[in-house]
View 1 (spheres, rainbow, N blue to C red):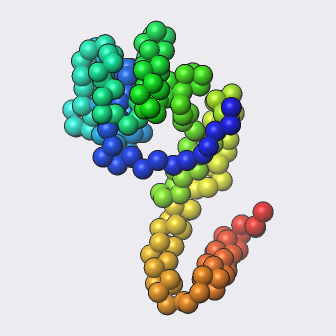
View 2: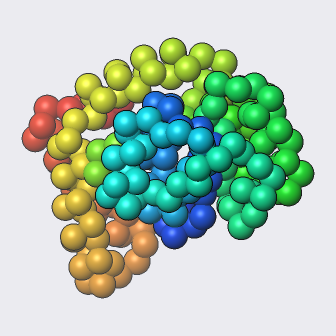
View 3: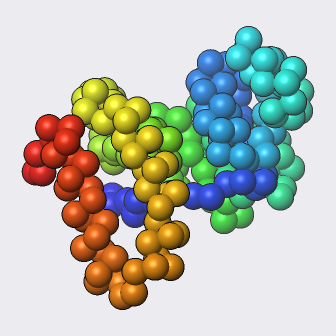
Length: 195
């Protein structure tokens, strides 16, 4: 399968996480970080999800997954250790045109979640198409070492001057050259060579 890489804007969008354990917590936390409205469906919650519930970052429906839980959701993550539940959620969500990820089961997914490196607004996503999460994790760790917090600060600084340059420097081509020269000078000052 060939995947189309995409970054989704999930702020205030209703999302569902099915499951109450550590993996469900990791998925819910990632969605909350993006501003999604996260509801967790599970008879019980692990410690991480309880913390998110306590600080009102998620809502909780205390029961086993049922078809009605999908109503109004735009994205679903099934993170249970119960294969029949994951299969049913996948079948129903895909039937209803709702994007679903079933953790570690790409054959049940309409999307897969990449391994991610975040440095402020700089986001790098790595995927092996679900074939080798271990390789994606290795590459993520390598990128984390190469792209330090300094790159997030660089991007933050660029955001501050970008608007000014767009207003003051006429012509797309000229602005592009100016940005490229500025980056080149920055990297040279850090001793980083262009690849």
